[in-house]
Length: 427
Image 1: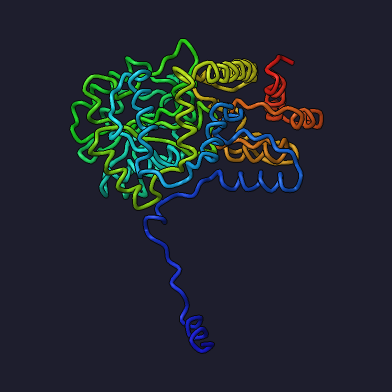
Image 2 (image 1 turned 135 degrees about the horizontal axis):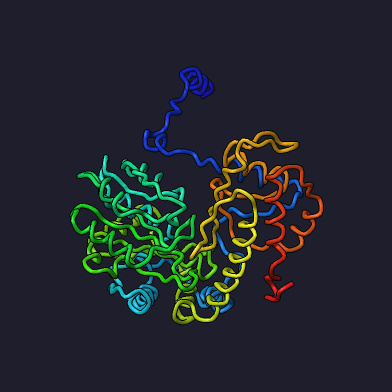
């Protein structure tokens, strides 16, 4: 036995990976997140402004539904596409709130919208197909395309145009290989909301290209600030047949840890997504699905519970936008939805920060904020409108304004004092 093991060691082990995996780029934010986690483990309070999740607890009626599901024995496998009860509730929601009609067999539930999105890309893209992605974009979109052996085609947008896709640019970039256009409205990471007229212009272009499908990521649809309104792409004339609509419960209902999302679309495409899922994970967990039914039972667009959360997000947005606009050199587009700020900090690049060194780009700025202020932000830089009560107040008085960039600390610390999240009172 020992001889065989020695022989295997001598021969070595082929540790090569699939070219598909090698094509996927590692996240540049992983190192910063690891550094933040190391600080937390060392007992250093870190201001987390990177994770894309609400800081509210899951609403009580939803949580109770999950608890009751366990007590009542709803703990077994569900159908691969999800329970009929929840798919019927989603069907009703999409018709009433989004103006799009899908039968339950046009809907597949997954373990989060990320799985729904990835399965959609895998289901419709062939090797060499092009996936069109407006930038700035959620970091996983291009990597999903690469995992499907497709080619991400990035289309730039401008802060001066609220990071919205220019239809003329889209028209110029469509080729015979164009298979998928990914739209996210409200947008992660910019908070931009596509007006209906602009979506109609995009739809007019799409209609002239039979191979081109739309993957519409609408997970922030309820976190939107008037006068902006949400329009589902599939509701536009002629777009139902070529649109895959993805949504989830994580954001609007503060259910990030429940891992529940879904895709709705033409049966042919959705069935293909279900086929992939059946060989990967099968359906999402039964308890989360019962909670999902309760979430959709809160009322139109989540009712008063979701409206109160959105009100708090708006107050935070208003305060942060006002504060950042007071800072010299910054450019900011006021978000119309979601809970992110996407800020141009390039004015500060090239400056020396005392005790840190030169700030060259968004990545080094993120490292600086984490190193000197324990602010965990995201390359770009986009931040959650989160509140951080006692921990941030403790940090505030230790900051030294040693360079122009340190003013960022002051704004972020002030943001923690806007509202007491637990009591919902101004402090």
